Length: 235
Image 1 (cartoon, rainbow, N blue to C red):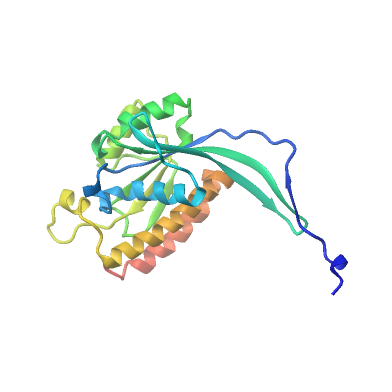
Image 2 (tube, rainbow, N blue to C red; image 1 turned 30 degrees about the vertical axis):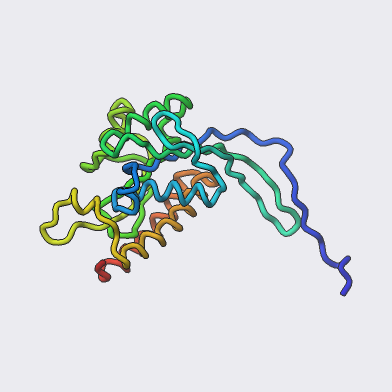
């Protein structure tokens, strides 16, 4: 075989590209071992999954949050070349204030980095979505979610920040919603959530490389079909 017939790929760095504004990803939850794996802590879980996928260490405390930072590399691939075309700074935070006071961390973090709220993406559990279904929204109300209420309050009542909603389903029968939120997932629900976390990590990568609007359009369409499939599959 004559290897000269084949063109070798090269890795190159774009000589000049504009520096994108950073993103702040905030996962909502409750600190402490007793809350690990509970429905109310899926925001924390998505932060951890994304940090692991990008090799970002969550090893510092900043503005009352477990904090990490890194660069997301935007790569362009063609037959001839693999090029680094951009690097997006990304900050990751898990507020340690307990859920109902999440804004005491989120507000100061956004202010510290001088970020517009459309660059602050908040992950949180949502009982209005089936377990394992995600939605990416550019803004919205708190929908009685106490963590979001606090975040909105500390964003000076501005609701125009994106959210990644992680469906956990509704409590069965007459179960107290507060007790439901602090329960761990059963085996079938855990499987759905683990799958959703992988999908969430992929969505976050798309947000960093393609932007929120384009990502939400395609991602929410996929999740809509997933929602339909799961409607007849009780947890």
